[in-house]
Length: 96
Image (cartoon, rainbow, N blue to C red; front, side):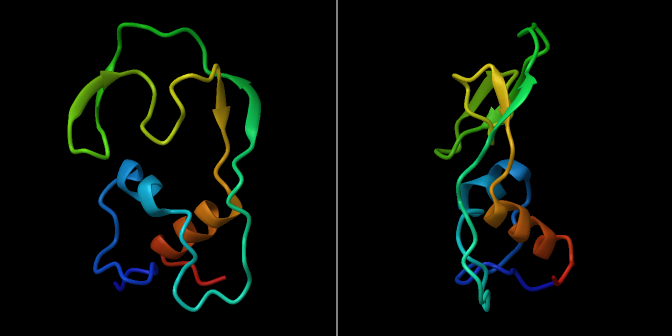
C-alpha cells in the first residue's frame, strides 16, 4: 500500500516511527487538522522494573517504561492529535 504521507516511500514500521512524522498533513488532505495533543485525566500509574527497550529518533536503544510517543516527564497519558488520528486511520486503510 502507498504511504499517505507526502514524500514518504513506505508506511512506518512502528508507532514510535509513526509518531516522528504523524503531525504532517497527508497527501491530498483538504482540511487542516489540529496538531495539539490533549493531556488525559488518566494517570500513567507507578513506574516499575518492567522497562522496555525503545528506539529514539537517533536510532539509539534505551530502557524505558514510557512509550516513545508519550512524554517522559508527564504523569498523565496524552491523547493523539486530530492529525495523528487521521494519519493513523489512513495507515490502517480507512479513507475518511
